Image (cartoon, rainbow, N blue to C red; front, top):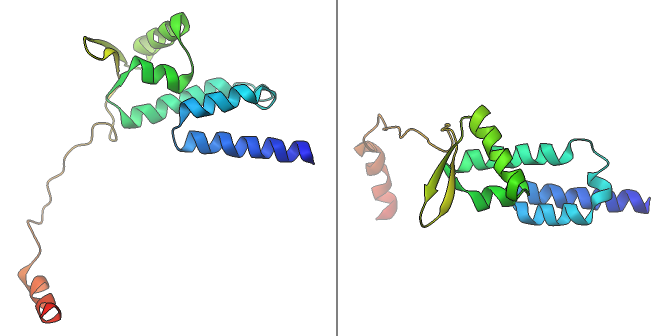
Length: 136
């Protein structure tokens, strides 16, 4: 029973970190709980895919360091991960003198929304006139 409660608590904490996009805290906690993480085949890859999905909803251009933290990969492994997504997922790489390397993610309705012009220019006068007696 105690083991079940500890595992349940660990999963709750990990879930909270993912749901709030606190990826660094997630990976730190996952490292402390290897017994839980290693019990699920493909766990790290699934979390990395989820992290990339969240970043793609948020960013058009994501700094390499932010991506590295979100997926918990660095160095040559990160280079290979990025190269794979450049070749297969429509990513691109941009060099920025002040921000370092930026990863350009494909546009979607969330990271590049279309601005929609309202068909209604304003509130009809009769609606506003109804509140004057209340304000007076």
